[in-house]
Amino acid sequence: MLTLWLWLGFAWAEDVVDLPVKEDAPAPVVLSEAEIWATLSPQDVLAEAVARRRVGDYVSAQRRLDHLTERAVLLPEAAYHRAILAEVQEDISSAEAGYRKVMETWPASPVAPDAAFRRAYCLEDLGEHRAALVAIKQLQRDGAWDEFDARTMALQRGIVEIRGGMKRRGIRRILKALDTVDPGNDQKWIRAKARLALIRVQVETARGIQLVGSKKAARRLKQRSSLMGAAEAQAIALFRLDEPEFALEALLLLGDAHMDLYQAMVEYPPPRSIPADFHAGYRAKVRTKSAILIVKAHTRYEEGVRLAARTQWQGKVTKVLKERRDATAPEAQGD
Image 1: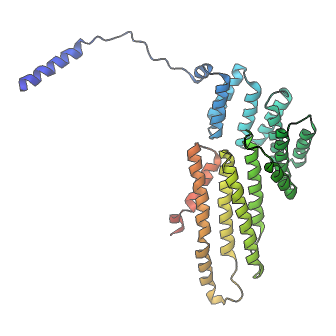
Image 2: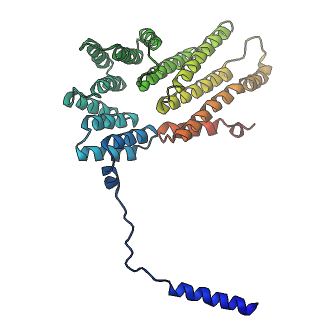
């Protein structure tokens, strides 16, 4: 048996040695990014850029937009999405300039109206409230807009009004426009941004309701809880729009709102009817009963982290959500 195994081993070795070696085999071809993109249509490269930006991969998105510019194709679209890229990275000045360039250089392009809408929002972010409102009003006066564009401008105007301090007017305008929006249209970003504006104003209003006065505290707590419930309802509608950037911000706002309410509860002074000797016990009881708010906040942060992972979103909000999720975890609370 041993002789047989030795013979098989030698036979295998001889077979290997006798195999011909192809010294002239061609080396594998490695294409650069630009060469790969050159094989794609400009529309496909643009779609990839948008997809990369939507998940927070800004560097890859920028490279693809640069490639389109170098090829001198889809220039209005590339410039428009370059401005969006600056906006989501909070470089609002560059974004505003980019949108203005699209409007001035390619006024007849399909993206010019959207550039005008987004520019107005950038003006608002820059603190130029009056200029933002003037820009929206000018858009509404210019030309004959179809029903779809009119609703889009109404939503943008409502956002600007809220951020400019005209909250009631802005809220009414947004709610009216949302009530008539066609769910099948593709302008989800402006609807998501409008929903987020409502969530933000509801959360801020809730935060401003101070739990003071032994008789008023309960009523104020009910008002605050009602506003937070309304914000949650808006968030549910926002999530259905499949716009991660705004959904993640909404979850962060909701989580923070619950933590703000928790702080307000534990900081509320004991009623005068409770003797000073029992204050420590009273505060401990309040912390225990209010701990559910930390759980709710943690749930919102956790939902945000999961959404970021599912959509591969790499923006700044993801880091904040992770930090606050960890800070509100049961083990972090000593439970």
